[in-house]
Image 1 (cartoon, rainbow, N blue to C red):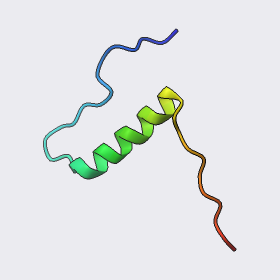
Image 2: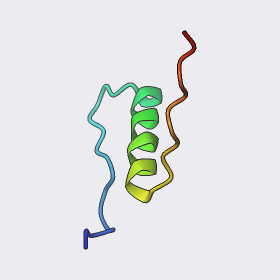
Image 3: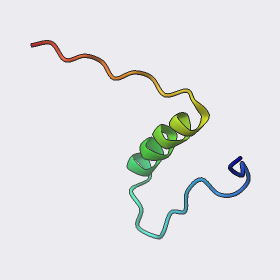
Image 4: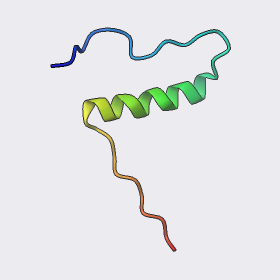
Length: 43
């Protein structure tokens, strides 16, 4: 069983915070099982 403790992300100086936050939320949703299905593209 994987550990649930610890940092989910480390952000060095100069990190683009909005992009890093979006990526972090996406990865946490996958890890916690809350990821949503991708929307099908209309052709």
